[in-house]
Length: 166
Image (cartoon, rainbow, N blue to C red):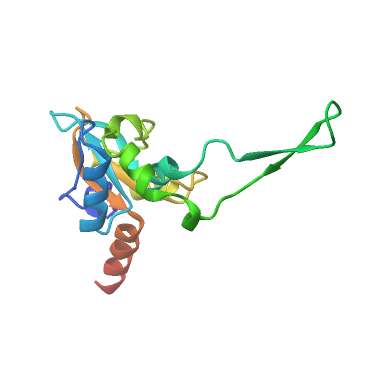
């Protein structure tokens, strides 16, 4: 008997709406031990995914170049250095206030890898251990793109373990 996505998936999926505020998603990350949520419209159709890394990107400076003038006018040259500010140095309070009302639709990923309930386990494994390191979970959708489940890496490992114990 071959395993399918239906055998692996968790059917009770926590989702967010594209109209939810970033603050709402932060609350969900605090409440649930997930690193991402499917984003669904009013009809429960998948429109994207929001992950912790999508939210972290809101707090990284866009311009990390520091310009330092050298010499005396009129002979001023500049050196540029790439500066990576440590997480602790970022002013999270100001950034959080600035981004709190942003809708999820502005920060979510829309290019989402999905499977159907009948997808075989090898295809699911290919997605979870493939070249894209950002894929940690795969939404399971029906023919109308409605989310019916989600598969995380640990779900696959658990299924193989359970099969070995049978």
